[in-house]
Length: 153
Length: 116
Length: 200
Image (cartoon, rainbow over all chains, first blue to last red; front, side):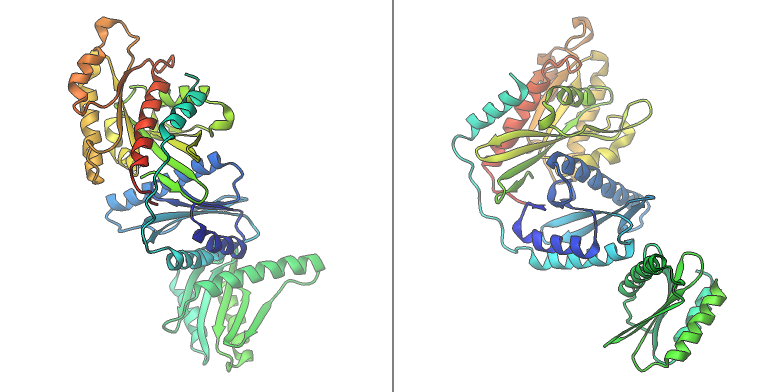
């Protein structure tokens, strides 16, 4: 379990255990990862988040084009695994949940506990603004060093 | 949902003490059709009923016993009746505890037969 | 807004490559993908048409390393350049922390560059972002073509660089200017981040 904010961890852990999902990912609507369970590589998580956010953004646009209000969950059911994708509102903006589940659970169960997860997250989200953060004075040197190391020039 | 299925579900909820009659997708636990008295939240019951039926099916297969025909789950706040409701479907009834179990059981088996 | 995890000390930034069709946005990402060590990058995802034109976006996550104690990651996106994919461009642009505008230096593509740059301004504005506020770097691609076919960086600057943002000549196919562009944008985005409070 990797979380960007400590308060997300408990609700997400509970969701994974209760819904019996293989992979769970919470992201912002622009595809930034907030928390995840089940991925082994952080870079793979980012790819999943980018694709998930893209799917949700597309369905939102389709709904807008059709004047259909908003769509809820997007579900892709495969022969072995299913993907459940659902945008929801948090105090700081829209988040998206992505869950991958196998035959050891069902869409109904995932849907049910996802609703509970959203309730838990909204309840536990901190109301106060984050504290101002100042990066150290060595920031620019460190940045240049990292860029040189990565790009080799 | 066809009007025939709705009629069948409505017939079950006419029995005293029955709060909801549901047709539930056996694989994913989603409500396909329902007849409920007002204010019932049926999604949770549908999801759990399907999950329970799946587990029981695995169990009966493993034990090589005949498949489930009717499952009755009694709790402090009410009862859950589950039976097969046709291809890939379950018939589920949510009732209060003072319901006539025999009457509901017969009604569900009859309803399942009409839908199958 | 970059995502900053103060607890795990991580920074994630979304950088978008914007520009007209066939200007070299995907080529930029392909070059980066090919040159960044495997342990510092994810898979490159290309949602493209059968003829390899970007349909939705290309996506490449890279890990910059630790900067001032923060593990820093970039999510690189391209947008589809064709005019009729504007809805998709708007979606990809959402939440961008910085933009590389890739202009095609060929003189005959000048009008398309202008149209795309205007489209960038419009789409940012629709999201409540002023193009003068967002970190922006201009890349003048295809500078390797014969001089009589292309406009010089100075000529392109006259049209596009009204903000005096970093602008770089490039030949993305062979890698010239690709990392320099990314480095320029990274610097602006992260410097800006250092001066602002984080947010989710």
